[in-house]
Length: 113
Length: 115
Image 1 (tube, rainbow over the protein chains, first blue to last red):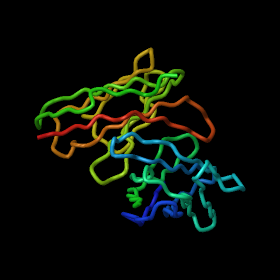
Image 2: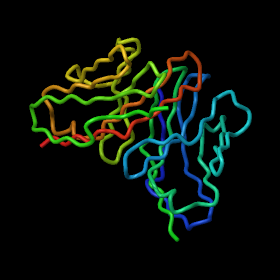
Image 3: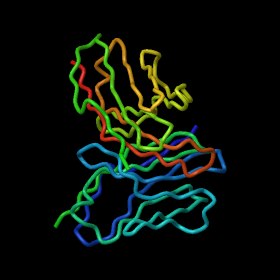
């Protein structure tokens, strides 16, 4: 079974600053994928970034980067230059093989002016 | 390209009733997964449909059932509603594949309230 742990219920950051959202995972599988989703108050889950377990380089997508430390089983999301529109819930999720997603409990990010 | 749509947006039901939620998958996608997201929690996998058959199921009782139609749209049915069924129900569509990444595209969800 897979497990995702997000230990930060809420994070506060000032506009234009960088923020790191923590995620640790547990699986016995060697092949897996790690995802980050953003969920605004509207409810829709928006895909942000993906990291495969065999990818040697950390994934980056614009202002989002994934700090992947395989030995520590962590996959932290780094948002650079935070914007007011980044305020939302953020979920870390895992997929093993080609199975469906297992999500963490999420971190609420609030960006202040 | 048409995204994932869900209907209705909101729904209020009484305990013991039955409910049907609908999902239209993204154009070109043949797999639909349903998730339940209780307030303050992450989404939990209910089941997945591929080629009109259930292809995997999470830890949900049989009163949660589904259908997938030839056009790949899907329904989630819940019988004998309980108060704990109150949640946001998310549908995600994807293209069946046997290797990562397994990208799923989510709809806006249906918020179900059971009173």
